[in-house]
Amino acid sequence: MNQRNAMSEYEVVRIMGQEEDTQMHVPVPPHREGGTAFASPHETPAGHHAKPPIDCGGAETREIAYGLLRVLNDDDEAIGEWDPGLDADTLRNALGHMVRIRAYDDRMMKMQRQGRLSFYMKCLGEEAVSVGAAMAMENRDIVIPSYRQQGLLFVRGRNLVDMISHCITNSNDNVKGRQMPVHYSWKEGNFVSISSPVGTQFPQAVGAAMAFAYRGEDSIACSWLGEGTSAQGDFHYGLNFASVYQAPCVLVVVNNQWAISTHRNLAHGGPSFAARGIPYNVASMRVDGQDFLAVYAAHKWATERARAGHGPTLLEMYTYRGDSHSSSDDPSIYRPGNEYDSWPLGDPVDRLKAHLVKLGEWDDERHTALEAECVKEITAAYKEAEKHGTLKDGPFPSVSTLFEDVYEKEPWHLLEQRGEVGI
View 1: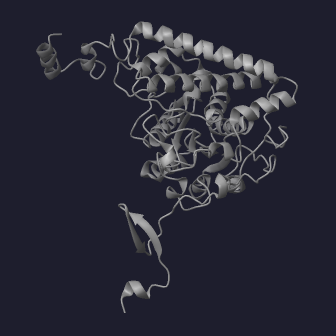
View 2: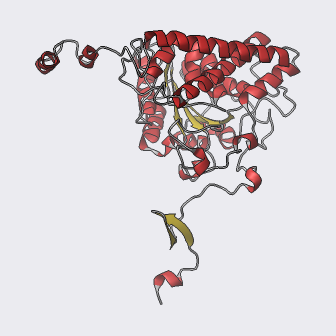
View 3: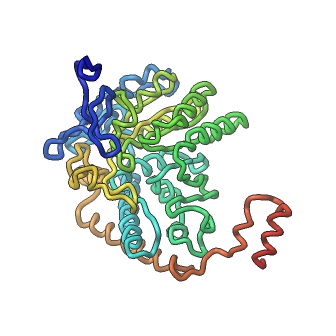
C-alpha cells in the first residue's frame, strides 16, 4: 500500500500555487463568519488582572501573559488596579497626539498616491501603542522602534517639517536621503534610526540597556517589533541576553494580527506572544493595544521595574493594523476589506474620546475642532517642508554627502572617488 494512502489524516495546502495533500501542518488565517469571528482574548474583562510588585519574578506575571490587560471597560470607565489615574489634561494631551498622528498619516498617504513621496506606512489602529509608551517613559530613555511608532516622535516633540522633509527626501532631510521614507532617525530625541532589516533592534536595545547599567545610569531602552518579526532569531537572542544580564529594558511585540501578507498564526504556535517571555523568566504581559490607559499603565510599570534594577519586561500589544502594511501593499488580497470595523477591541481614538466624554471632559464639538486643527497644522507643515525641495524637482542633498558621516578621517579611496566626481 502506498504510504501516502495509508495516512489516517492529511491536509490539503497550497504550495507554490498548487494544491498538495500533506501531513505537514500549514496554518491558515482563522475563518471569520461575516468578518467578525476573531480568535481573540477580548472577552477578558477590564480590571481582571491584579497588579504585581515591580520586583516580582517573571513567573508571577504568567496570568497576564496568557490573559489580556485592560483598564477601560465596555462602559468607557477606567477600573481595576491598573488604572493609572491620569488627570483630564493628560488624557486630552494623549488624544491630541493620536488625532494628530491620524491626520499626518492621511495627508502623507495622499501625497504618496500623488507621487510626491515614494513610500509610506500608516499606523491606523495602533496610535495608542506608541503614544502610551512615549508618555510613560522619560525623554532620556533610548527608543529603538520598528515601523508605525511615529507616535514616539510626536510625543517627544519632533518638528513636523523635519519629519516630512525626511519623507520627501529634500535638502532638509536629516538623514540626507540615505534611508527610505518613514525610516526616521533623531539623535537629539534618543530615537534610533528605523531599519528595514527588521528584528535587529531587539538585541541592539538590550545592548544599549546593558551599557546604561554598566555605566550606572538610570536610563532604560525600549524597542518594538511586529509579531511576524518575532519568528526570527533576533527576538530570542534579545530575550535571552535581557534575561541573563537583567538588562533595564522594555521589549514590545506589536501583535497587529498581520505581517505584510501573512496572519499572526504563521509566526508562533502558542497561545500568545507574551507567553514566550515566561520560559526566559522575563516579566511578560499581553496588553489591549486599543486601550490607551492599559498601554500607559503597562509601560509605566515596566519602565519603573527596569529603572529600579529589577530587569526586563516583554509586552505584547494586542492591536490591529487597520490599513495596508505599506503604500506598496494591497490588503484586500488576503483579508476582508471591512475587517478593522469588526475588530472586537475597537478603535483607540474612539475609545479614549468616549472615556473623556464619560468623565465630562470632552464632547463632539471639541473633537471636531481638534480634528480640523490637526488637518490644518499638517497641511501647513507639508507646504513648509516643500520649500526645502520636492521629491520630483529637488533640491536634494549634495552629492558630497555620499562620502560623509562614516569615517572620522576620510581614507584614501574616498578622497580618490571624490576627485572622480569633481567635489
